[in-house]
Every structure is written in structure tokens, then in C-alpha cells.
Length: 472
Image (cartoon, rainbow, N blue to C red):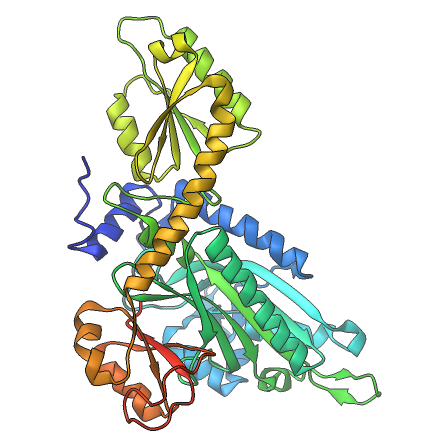
């Protein structure tokens, strides 16, 4: 029996409880920061391993850059510093002395990496330059929520330089496609790719590509972004090179990243009243085997059989054995359901006699009695089906919260009180965009489609569809 808050009545409280009770994270003595516990770290490492493989396969190289950035670096690009200044943490003293120049704890690494690019890029032969960094960053958030919005968070940030704007745009789109693949085929989360409005784009970018997820409570979550960076950055850091004609050119830049926010998205999109439900492809533990001990009986044969089975499965699956003899089977079932492990295998003395086991699938709780020799094939079928079912279920939920509307008056009440995703037309004026602030909402992204004929606010001709929602 779950003792979590009701997921339908208080989604925010349910989310907080799952994060802490499933041991994904814990509170920290530093305001706005969390401690990511081993299980939460294991989930992030699964995401990281898949993405890092794709980053390298697409021609990028990992590097590590300093945590501290000279404050003067951020002032070189006015729009960039203006966008981040309220969130900056600044070091003014070190080694018992006041620093000659304050150092900023990186909110992002564009300025530091672009400074280094200026040292490394001398000729068109040095291009494209493709660098990625796995790091932590600091943005001094006023209102925080574990994984979704914290003052310190972990991410990867890719930074590239190209000869032409077309190459840079292709790079930004390619990495967005990699992110969408990660979200949909590994996290089992359907997402909506698009472009941010001028007001919402990254400070100092020409264009920001985004992919948005819709959470079950009707709020959108920006799950990652890929930016075409303004040449102002290259010019600010004197990042010029000798072009093919022997003249001087500035490269076209990109940056792109996803964060530990993806762990929060997993919790919200797939979780239920029992806790987490993890997609098998990203679950750090895919199968937990639980021996059902019989009191007053020698259990060594049962334990031997359980560990032999686990060893035979580990070449194909990520397997854990819970052989604690001081916990009841019910307590173990509850604990592993809370942690969202996709499949549980139960083996008791009678199962051992019959050379079979009970397989329990996390999403629906369905059970199968399977002979030992068929467990591998049964697990493959069960895990593949669960991965697919989670994506389909999330898609269906998204559809129920996605509305096509014409004017703000049609959906303003529902937007304010119930959330949801609203596809409407827009004239591209700032005034119409700002009208959404009254409802605690904004434009999540611009779509390529042009289904709506008029702006949701002023009724003028629409220049393309947008998605409107409240957001985390």
C-alpha cells in the first residue's frame, strides 16, 4: 500500500516524495542545491553513457574547462551577461585576499570556451572544431525543485565552431535530433521539437532550438536546447582565422546541452501511485531477483539457485539480488516498486522444486510463471514490451492535454486553472506574447506547421503555429 501523496490530487507533493523516498536525491545544507544519491546518479549515468556515445560518434571530443570564469569575460557579450546577471554567483575573495578581478562560478561555459577557441582556431583547416564538456554549473535560482530547477546542476554542454552558417545550423539541428532520439527511444518520453521565440531564446543566440515535454499535470518542461550562437561571441573574443581565400573570417558557433532535469522528467512522466516506473533501456537495475525465504528452513539451496540465475542473466541484463533476510517479501516488493525496477523475479522453495520463477512486470503488475530455461527469452519480451508501452502511454496522455484553439478567450480559463498545451497561431508581436504572462504561461516553441490562420490574441494574420503552456 503506497503512502505517497495522491498523484492526481497533489502532483507536486507526490513528485517531491518520490524523489526523496526512492533515494534519488536528498536535501543539502546549501540553499537551492541537492545531493544526488547513488540511485539518482546511476540513472543520470545511464543517460550520460548513451548520450556520450552519440556525441563521440558524431565527431565531438570531450574536454574539461575551469569552473571559475573572469567576470570581464561575461561583459564581452552584452546580451549574454544581461541574460545571466541575476543568476550569477561571484567569488570576490580567495587565499585570504580580495581578488583583483572577481571570478564568476560558471552559469555556462560559452565565454571560457570561446576564449580558448580563439587561441586554437588559426586557419580554416582547424574547422569544424567540436568540443563537449560534462560538468556542473551554478545559476542562483530563487525557487528550486529537485532535478527540475536547482542552483547547481549537472549537464553536458557542447560547443562547436564552423566555417559557414549553414554548417552551424546543420550542427544545431543534428544535436537536437540526437536529443529527441534519446528522449523518445530511451527515456520513452514523447517530445515536441521547435524553435524558441526571440524573447525566450538563449541570451546571445541567433536561434534556439528546443525540445519540450508535456508533464502529466499539464505543465511543459524544456528538456534541452541547441543554439545557433551569434557571431558577436566570435568577434567579442577576436576569434578570427585565415579563410580559404587567405582573408580573415569569424567562425559560426553553436552550443547545446541537456541536464539532470531529464531525471525529473522520467519521474513525472512515468511515475504512478507506487513510485517510479523506469523505462528498461535507461533503468540502472532492469531486474531484481527476490528469494522468498521459508522460516525455520535451510535456505542455502534457494540462495545458490538465485545467485546462479543472476549470474546467468547478467550478460544480457542489469540484475540485482535482494537476499536480505531481515526484510519481509512485502517490504522488498514495495521498495523495488518505489524505485521503478522494470521486472521483479520471485523464487520460493516451491518454485525451486518446480525449476520455475514468477516474473512480475512493474507497470501493470502482471505475473508470469516461467521455467528457468525460458527466463531469458521471457525477460527480453517483457522488457521490450514495457519500453514500448511506456512511450505509448505517455503519447496518449500528451494527446489528452494538447488542444487546438483559435483565440486566447477560448482557452485562458483552462490554461490558468488546469494547464495543458495549446496550439495556436501568432502574429509574432511581443505584445501578444506578453499577454500570456497574466496566466502564468508563455510560448514554449514555434512550430513549422501553419494550421492556424490568425493570432491567438490580436486576430491578425498568423505567421505560424506556436505552443502555449505553463512551464516548470
